[in-house]
Image (cartoon, rainbow, N blue to C red; front, side, top):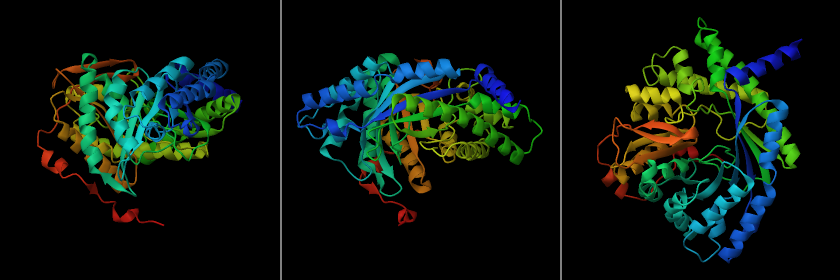
Length: 452
């Protein structure tokens, strides 16, 4: 009887509460594709990806049918391309991005991540070449995602990289200005990036990972909201218990899917990322969870406290459900991808400053935020520095995904479509940060980084 009840409950969560597996992401090492000849390296990359991920989409669809649990995205992450292409004498890495794009199309995945560089303390030649290639690479490909890690708790923040990334984001947006700067939606700037993240646009395959591995990202904001709706008289500590139990159920479903797909593909199962990742769909919003907890409008007083409790309860419940929890595992607050966040931004209830405060207690950072196209690159760099500082000091992953929308300003909206959704153009503080960014150098690691 108990098993039957659990089955019925899971069916209800899928049909009525937007429970899904947000992504299965195959991580693929390209270290054995290194070659001093760029053309040969790219052929090796294409051959390995198409061979390793040949059955990824088919097996994902098969599991969807067998278990009745939707898998929204099938994706691939690869070794940071700066490490692979750096062995060649080439300086333009756009052909490597095109190879990734061709391989992603060949196997039918939604996105491929790993056009990336890790530069928390400085640059190699390959890192600089990759960063300078990002704008054109994202403008000329459909499925490639890029990330740059500019800092860490151990290393501090590379402010020269931060300065560069402001310019790179602007260039990404400009080259795709006829699509409201959509190129910038596929670029994330990190502090404390993790090498087992299944979510785009920041996924890459870390060098400490197996040759191939399967990660899963599970999501269920709608399930959590419905659970809270049923207990409107509960105290906050009682709500925390309810959220934990709900996260446990969501995580068990994800663990079953992940281990089953990994077994079918004959690759190790990596991690289960139990982040609450919203979509623009009604009933699939993190913002609406916070409002159901009692905050009148997302962004109003109490928002940060409610989000902190939600994030912690989700982690606690997930950890009890699987020994393989990893990635980012928290509540995401991407403005354009969350119906409640979109409404809060439109109504003026939430600002960039409030979003920055919220990122101190959740995953991941200032995410999918559209800003006026004439915002100076130094302002973008300063916003990146602020988020990186939060990550560095608090030993957590933080990130920035800003979209300058050329030709539009506050009060207008950017349309990205699909999971990227709609983004109201948000106001940016007009203070000049150019003198601060021009100093360059490195912000040293905090004292608590010295742990051995």
